[in-house]
Image 1 (cartoon, helix red, strand yellow):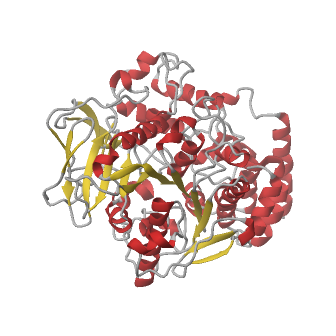
Image 2: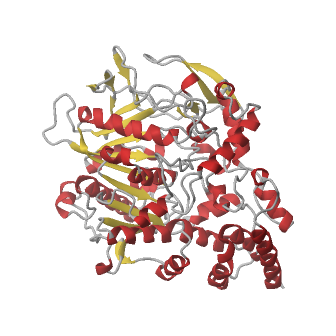
Length: 611
């Protein structure tokens, strides 16, 4: 009987799609209500991923910095901190002034270095401005506030305890044996990490991203940056940047941080001509955009993209303005009244952001549920979708790229949205909302493979294949055809004790989204699990590959690996090419090169031509 229900539902949705809409005013469509009107029994979250909490405003004044407002979460816990034990540290002279860091077991660390002036007050929705030089010695012994965000649920434990609009800072990690008081004869490569978090959460100072281990192991200078998030970083209220919020500020912040690295990293022993940018999830999206943005071209040499959600669409200007209009309604400001918008407290901006996060601007682009706020195609900085740019060769093809996914990316997204079982009928609703006229072919391909009454595993695999794995493979093949140097991987390992990192309890027994991070950053203990000896060897191998790539642009460079991976027996990671059978590196306790995973499914998606 359920197959007949599916057919009836498809017929109903086909009529809706053919009519071109649901209501006369598409601006006000609520996707949840729309789907429930079609199938009343629908199980779906009404609230967004990240939910607002109670906040209080506190005054924060740092030495040598102007007094600003900080939003501090009401909690009995202490703010996230790093144990430096009052250790003495080196002093470095940058172009903006002197900075004193700390020296610990693994590295010299410089926390909270300002790379732009605070984007507060009248500068809230403006491009980042150069840092105002300071007198005296800047205290870089502790992390500064993260950018404004709020979260609850599974990831609440990871949220920064102190957030502020004054958040344009970066952290630098230098190998402990580097003498910063004397110039290096051979400057070290630089690895700049861009954190993920759906462009609404995350922090450079998250303990999971502690850069001291990568830095010391690979002999690189590691930089972690903060950038504006949510409405603070991506609100679009109009087209004129002088009289409205014009969006993409978070990406401009990243550019400003990369420019700061070019100007100053030599003082920390880094080589500005050998900068690798790397990031995961929204961080990988950011990396992909910098590969497309012409003005970012001189700021880095090569890139690593970890779990890039290629098929989650960037908003068009039209849709970004719709979101901005809805945001303004929540604040009782006119969308054209920038003075009113600027007068809002940080809590009011965050509250309006949260309320608009549960609403999908375009109901026929259902994947926006995974990324309400973020970069948009403004026609100047960002000119097209990343997946389109990579397939058409509209990116910096001369730069080496290391690109990969985890084997079960979609688990975290599907189980995060759908907290109750999803029937075949209900799953058909979502598949139709996303894929429209392609729905029958997709159902025909996937339904026979999943017999459980709960179809969330099927949806998770579709998300893995369509959003992450297959468009990455398609883009990598387009790059190699154009002569680019590309290496592909799949991270396919689950922690041995079956506990999970990032507080994501529904990732048991899965190598899900972000699963590689504790291995790459050697921060498993922070992520609440312990590495076995084979897993420790996997972590070391990953550090060897990433380090060799940073040094030479080739993760399998034997000459470079021998300098810091002498005891590692590393499988050769072949460059991605059709002459090698399109081999990818399977990163697990027994890492090995293999023919690409799920090739038959990716062939199917490639033929659909809907990335």
